[in-house]
Image (cartoon, rainbow, N blue to C red; front, side, top):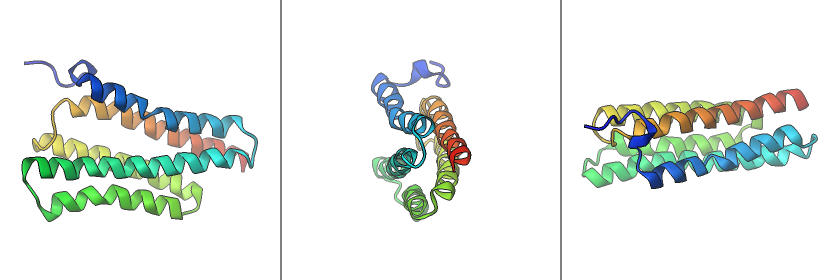
Length: 152
C-alpha cells in the first residue's frame, strides 16, 4: 500500500490547485510588507477577504464529504458551516483581531480535517496536502500581523 503521508500520494489536480490557492495569501502578505502605510491596508483587506472565502471553502469540503457518503448529521453539517461563520466574523472585526481569528480558524479546520481523516470520512492523502497548506496560510497571516504591528 502506498504511503499516504507524503505529497506524492496526493492526486495531482488537488496538489496543483491547492498550492496555487496559496498565491493570494502570499501576495497579500508581501504587499503588506512592501507598501507604505496606509496603502498597505488594501493588501490586508484583500487577504482577509480571500481568507474568509477559503475558510468557507474548507467548511464546504466537509459538507460535500457528508453528502458524498450519505452520513448526514447535525454534527457533520454543523461543523461544515463553522469556518464560514468564522471568516465572516473575521471580516467584521478590527483587522488585527480578524487576522488572529483567521489563524485560529485555519488551525481549527486543520484539526477538524485530521479528525475526519481518522474517522474515515476523508481520504488518507488529504493529511499530506492539508499540513503544508495550513502551515503556509497561517505563516502568511502571521506575517501580515507582523507587518501590521510594525506599520501601525
